[in-house]
Image 1 (tube, rainbow, N blue to C red):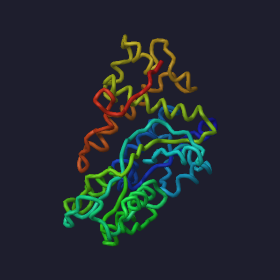
Image 2 (tube, helix red, strand yellow):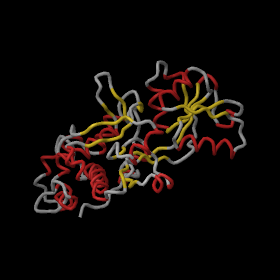
Image 3 (tube, rainbow, N blue to C red):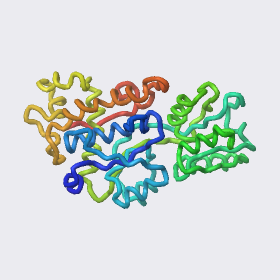
Length: 313
C-alpha cells in the first residue's frame, strides 16, 4: 500500500481481448467490467479514476506478474481456485462476475452436445482453468477430442475461425462477446452446456492485507450502492440521508467507513460519482449491443442473484 501511495498511481493487470470485460478501443482507451473495477479501486485510494496504469495480461502471464510485483492487483476474469489461492500467494477479493465454461462452434454443424464433437478438435487458451477443464471432461466422457492450445484468447478464436478446430472453449461470456463482435455472428452457436464454475475475481499479493481489504470493500461498496439505488447521477442526493446504513456506506454523519481502511472516510462517494455502482458498470459494458446480456446470477441477491455484500458497519 505504501509503495502504491509513493508511486502515485495503481498498476493493474487487466484483460485486453475480452469484449465487455477488457479491451483497448481504437483510441487506445481501456474499457470493460474488469477495467472499471480497477478504476474504482484507484478512486478509493487516490480519489482519481485515472490514477492508474493498465498492464495487459495474457492468461499465462498472470502468476509471474503478481508474484514479481509487476502489478499491484489483477482484475482479469481470473477464476479463484485452490491451487492459485495457495501457490500464487494471493488474496482474492469478492467475485465480480460469475460465469462458467462453454463451448462455441459453427451453426452449420448442427451440434447440440459435446459428445457430437467426438473425433473433432477443440481450441483452448493455454494457462487457463478452461484448458484443464476441457481435458478433464473429454477424458471422463471417453471422447476422442484433440485439445489444441494457443497463447491467448484472440489467437484461440482466430484458430477456430480459420478452421483448425471444429469448436472452441472459454468462459461463456467470452464466447458470447467474440461471437457477437465477429464478422458474421449468425454463423456461430454456443452449446447448451456449462463445463465448470468460473468465478472471476480480483486478486492481490498476500503481503499486504490492508491493500486487499481496500479492494474487497470497494467492490462490496459497488454492490451496496446498487442495493440502495445510489448511482453516479444521484449520489449527492444521498449525502444527507437519514438512513444509518447509507450514512455508513458514504462515510457521512460522523460514521466511520474508509477510516477503517486508512483511506478517505467518504471514499465510496467518489467511487460512485466517478465509476457508478455495480449495476451501472454491468449495464454499460454487457447489457448493451452486441452483447445484450441479462444479469442472471450476477444480479443482486435481492433479485435472485449472487451479488451480496457484508454490511458497512
